[in-house]
Length: 164
Image (cartoon, rainbow, N blue to C red; front, side, top):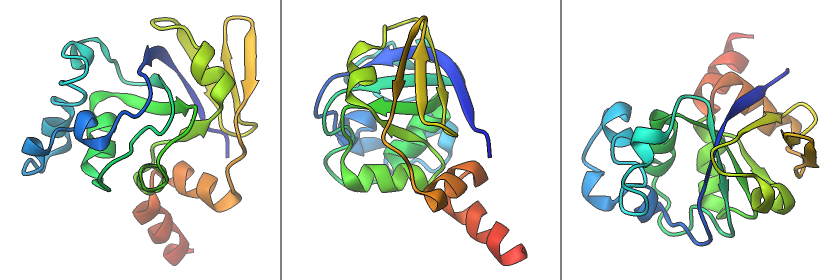
């Protein structure tokens, strides 16, 4: 299963919580595209205008801390984020991201070094992150986590398994 992501990098710092990723006042919205329109608006009001499908976030420590809302992951995906490279991520956010098919790669070196606005490439098959002539290796993901991501999330993965 080869999963490759290539997109422009958007940088965010440490302790970005789920209420910053998607403010609580939008939790009543149900359509992903509506959630995506409000993604990170309190932290970076121009983010949704700049982000394009396939883009990558480079983030600091404890990304996605706070409440366990899945809405934050849905908003990121709907805004166009294809993958996240993090120094570290909150455990519940990480699991929600896997369940919803959004790869979170833990690689402190890459997360700190990726340059804003420049294209980066992520290959999940060997957990490599590259930008220009620099290359890094993220922490490995388990086989089933990779299968869930390849299927597009936990529900599609279960459907796949039940259909087999």
